[in-house]
Image (tube, rainbow, N blue to C red; front, side, top):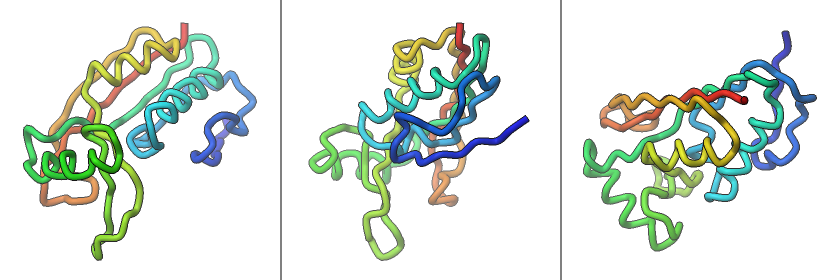
Amino acid sequence: AAFYTGDVTDVSNLPIPGEVQVCLCQLLISVIGDVGSRAALLREARRVLAPNGVLLLSASGASEDVNENYKALYEQDKKVTGEYRTYISRGAQGQALYVTHHFEVPELEGLLTQAGFVDVQTRVESEASSRRPEEKAIFIYASARVP
């Protein structure tokens, strides 16, 4: 068994020889960047997985229905990010840390399918926000397989 790491700012060529059985992406797809970067991440995960290999993925989900603060962030930052449900995560002093995207289930399932995954399954959970534990947020847990 082996554990591989790589620079997620360039997912086009992770230092993984290919043919791994499981790839785990914990919230990575939510903070990787724009739509093109999200698709590239999934294509690279698909590349390194062996036939019947499994992708386990979690993503931030659209949370405006459970948290008014997220709705305000989505609307405020759309002017900067150009995408609804994509906002700038900020530190305690308001400094920009990174861009975060919150997915709707069909959007995430579509990206997985477009990347060549099959048997896509998702589960949605309402939990404490990862950066704001006193607030609710939606998280999507997905699994998919390489044919």
